[in-house]
Image (cartoon, rainbow, N blue to C red; front, side, top):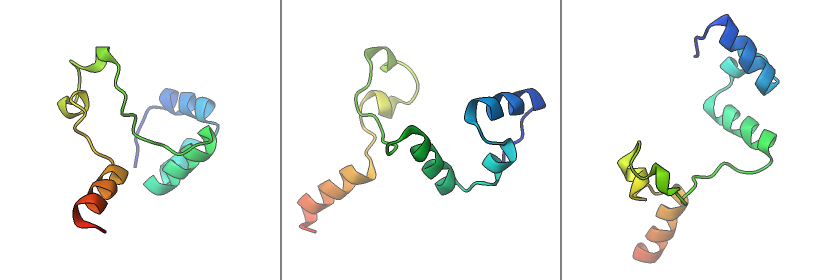
Length: 82
């Protein structure tokens, strides 16, 4: 899935603690669960945005228009009574 130079591969292996081949063989779900186990909590989308980010990158992020699945579930429960 990924193709990188040997120097970058060695740097990643040193910082991550697993071989590049193991990382390359993981599915996206396995990568996410490995990261969550390594950091000790669930990955979440941060809704508080520092002011210096407001003029950069994704305009939806700057305007706080990105919604998570949990947000959509709450909204659908309210609108549709599910």
